[in-house]
Length: 157
Image 1 (cartoon, helix red, strand yellow):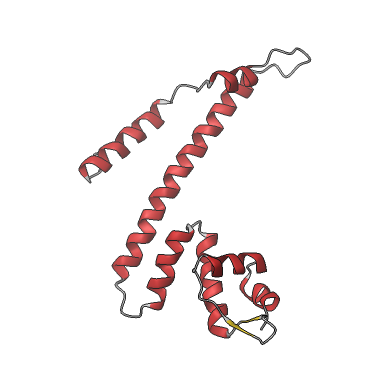
Image 2: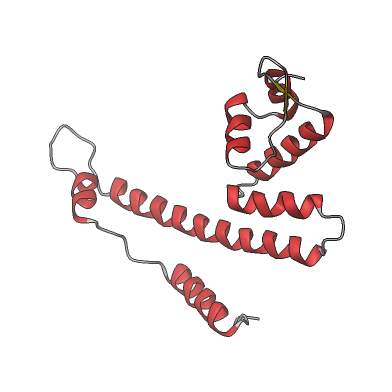
């Protein structure tokens, strides 16, 4: 099948498929005499695997590792689990950062009158880098996470 058909079958855009080939996430595929890419069923399975990994937020670097593990039938599931657990930690950190951003914006919006006057706590907060104080719950989560990463155990367990 051609790249358009491969894109439709895999759920990826043709542009992403070309990008994944350029960064060696997928091997170069066969080409016709006129230079058009030709994809086989195995290529489509790889593209679907990548699309699902991408949907879970794995980076290109992580996907390189996952594709290698997927192709290696003598792999250890412990290696796959380690990649997944590392990614979960990254996701938790991103969630915490997003929650912090939301809390900051919520705090600033709550203090903005939203009227016709030019003074605006949101603009002032952005220009001053103002952050709302952490709630006790968030602070204790951070301390617990910091202790976990230092000691390797969770003090709250």
